Image (tube, rainbow, N blue to C red; front, side, top):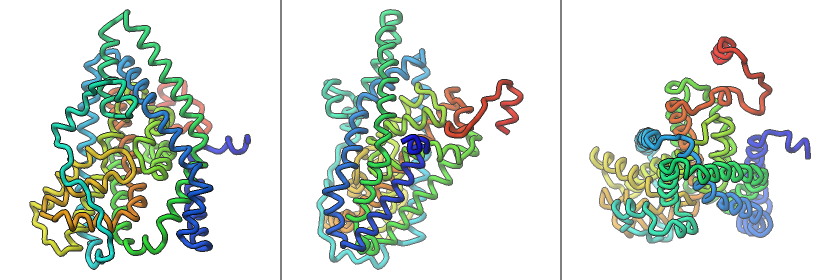
Length: 440
C-alpha cells in the first residue's frame, strides 16, 4: 500500500487510462465488440459509475462552499466584479480561437468529403432551443434550495455570489457565517482527496468499457472526422493555452499541464466538465498555487460557460455536414458558423454528448433541413463519446488556464507552488535573491 500511495496520483490515473485502452482493445479482439462491451458493462463499468457518482456527489457542496468562501476571502465585492470581467473576457478570447482553428481544420482535412451517410439512422434533435433571454432568466433561481437539489450550476453560482456579498455587507454579524463556509470548503476539499484515491480504478473501468463499446469498425468508418477533431483540440491546447501560460504569464508550460493531469484524465474518462469540477479545483489550488478565492469563483463558471472544445467541435461538424451533402459555403456562412458555434457552446450542459445536440442551431445558419440534421446526428452519435472525451479534456484545460491567468493578474497566484511541483523535493528559497535566481 505504501508503494501504491508513494506514486504521484496523476501517474496512477494516467497509467490506468492507458491500461484501460489496452484491456478494452484486447478484450474486443478476443471476445468480439458486443460480447466484450457486455462483459465490461456488467463487471467492470460499475466501478467507473461509482467513481462518477462520488465526484458528482461533491459538485454542489463544493461550488457552494468554495464560491461563498472565495467571495468572503476577497474582502471587497468590487474585486469580484474585476475577476468576473477578466474571466468572461478571457473565456470569450479562447473560444474565438477555438472557432477559428475548428473551421481551418475542417477546410484543410475536409472530413465530410466522401462520407456515406446513407446507412445512418436518423436521430431527431430539438431545432427550437431556449432563447438567450430564457437562458439569462434561468440563472436566477426561483428557489435556491431547489437549485441545489437539481444541481443547477449557474443558479447555484448566482446564489453563492449573492450570499458571499451579503456576508461581507453584514460585517461583524456575518463573520460567523463566513467562517462556517470557509471551514466547510476545507472539509469538502478533504473529502475530494479521499474520492480521488478511487480515480485510477474509476478511470480504468470507464475507458476500458468505452474502448470496447465503440468498436474498431465504427471508429474506422469515421476515422478522418475523429482525427480532425483530435488534432484541432490538441493544437488549441498547445498554441492557445500553452501560449497564454508561457508568453502571457511567463510561467513554465510543462508544470501547468503536469499539475492538471488528474483533471484531464478524469475529464477524458467521464466526458463531463461538471463531474470533473471537484478534481479541477483541487489540482488548480494545490498543484498550480491558485488561491481558493479565485479557483472557487472562476472554475465553477468555466465548467458551465467555457466550452472551447464544444465550440470547435460544432464548427468542424458544420463543415463536415456541408461537405457530406455538397453544400457550398460563402465567407459569410463561415462567419455565422463561428459566431453561432460560440454562442451555442456557452449553453452546452457539462454532460456527455451535450454538444452534439446543439448542432441544429449551427446548421440552421446555412439552411440544412431537420431531416438531414437528424441523419448527421445519427451518423456521429455512435462514436460521439470518443470525441466528447477529448473535447471535455480541452474544456477543463481551458478552465485551469483562465483560473491561472486571472489569479496571476489579481496577485492570487503562489508562483513557488506553480514552479516547484509538490511531488518533487524542493527547499523553498529564504531570500528574494535566491528565489529570483531559481525562477530564472
